[in-house]
Length: 197
Image (cartoon, rainbow, N blue to C red; front, side, top):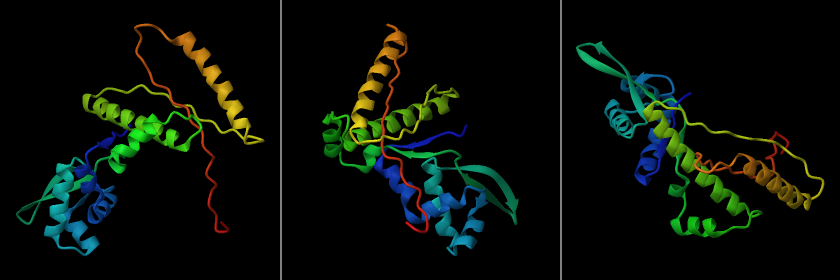
């Protein structure tokens, strides 16, 4: 499985999201040299080299090989395989996140977004550490789709699911065992866009 590159500092995000660097990361899904990228993008090689050095320092690209060419060494780089995950806290104001964190309405979309953001941050951090140490992070995912006949059924379903989960948790919860956080959320299934939408 490909590793996760986890970005939690605003400076790291600026490095990755600057327009020329986004384009370079996209093109570097396949290994290439600064000369090849400069020709493809119509940019000076020195400028491309500068952006590649910044991306390499940020850990977003890696050296694949070095080739001798006309008395010089040509460096072949590629984007690091796997997902780039940005800590959701980087993209929102701290006061806004703390307000969402205090919101405990299990039916509020803001609460679901806050909980999901926490899950992204926690899992991405742990996966990055597991990758670095050559270990596997044991997680589980449960996904399902349910069609409700009436809006009020959402509340009844949530109450019954909460009770079912409480019972299963009670069976498996062991004092001194390794704690796991389980998050369940639901949201309307996005409609697939067609030419007619």
